Image 1 (spheres, rainbow, N blue to C red):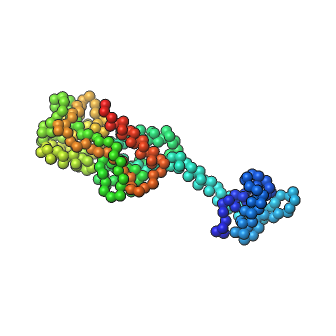
Image 2 (image 1 turned 90 degrees about the vertical axis):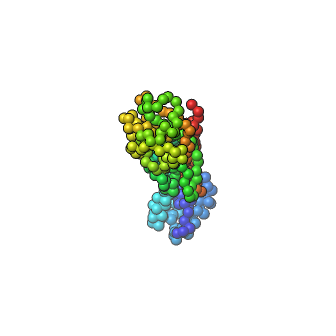
Image 3 (image 1 turned 135 degrees about the vertical axis):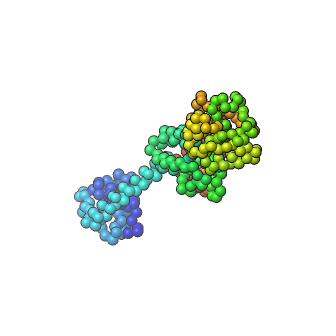
Length: 294
């Protein structure tokens, strides 16, 4: 049975449908001798005749063994056609892509990436996973947005620098840049000290600046709400300031802090699906537009 080939089964199905080797040959674009050879190879593989051949103009008749072979053969042919269609859809970009993300990217970069993929490939399956962590599960995903480099077998594609800015209630500081020294001991709302937040606070410490952290929260909107409430100011990356309004004032810092770096990560030596490859291209385009000077 290991010698049975799909082309043999396809030829058998054509003979059964057409009732003769000649009409099956015409349908398949084969010669009649080729059809005969393929049926003979199938009969050898299954160990008996699959058609009775009365000769002359009479149609061929399927044998009891042929009935069993044809029933299972049609199932195999249908599965093979399904496989071929699925591969074609995959190559066209209508597969599945798993993308890891975090808050700022989810709000600013990811939406146009998803829109672009959906527009080009309406049948694609996009799975998103958002987590604030120092240990991104790169090996469990096709792609992952992250705010630092990761050790190990990971490829990095830098998307942009995300500068840190000071956000405060209007009138807390004079208009214009705010010197870092003015923040020493000042009340401040902050993210938890994970990911790039810890590096930013270390950069402040190198300048001899130690703000008084009065509240920590992972939510960008919560940070901004507490700043509006007068709990303190906040140092946030530019991408996190989408919810800032006219009650708040955004200041540059002097001297400036090293910007947060936004990367797209994936497992090293991984072959991307067409959908994942296109997601990378769109993310690079979106990040390029964001990074352009206003």
